[in-house]
Length: 136
Image: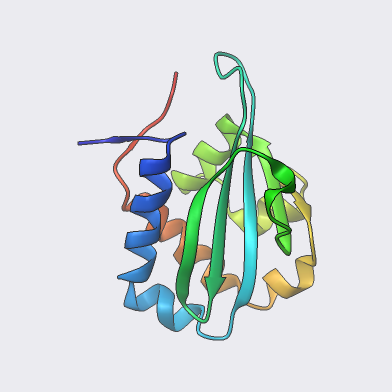
């Protein structure tokens, strides 16, 4: 059964997939950094959602929806409308390419992310394993 994309259940499912992925663990074994993935309002989506993920040496130590952007101070913030996030999750937009071309707006050190592109791709691969119900 598909899980609604803009839900706590979805980000928890992603955390479980990440933590059970040997491929992600290997690709991100040297990664240290946390993120806000900001889904901006668009069309029928009237309110944005902020997913927080703390990724550390191939594991996700924490993942949740954040209701107040000031709640945490992540090293990276990546924001885009839901249609762009959907393209990333469906592997129609490479996340690194999206950041370089500003289709995904990054606040944080792009060079740090570019040093571990396989980790970014494996995180997207983990997203594809979560059965997702995108809002229309």
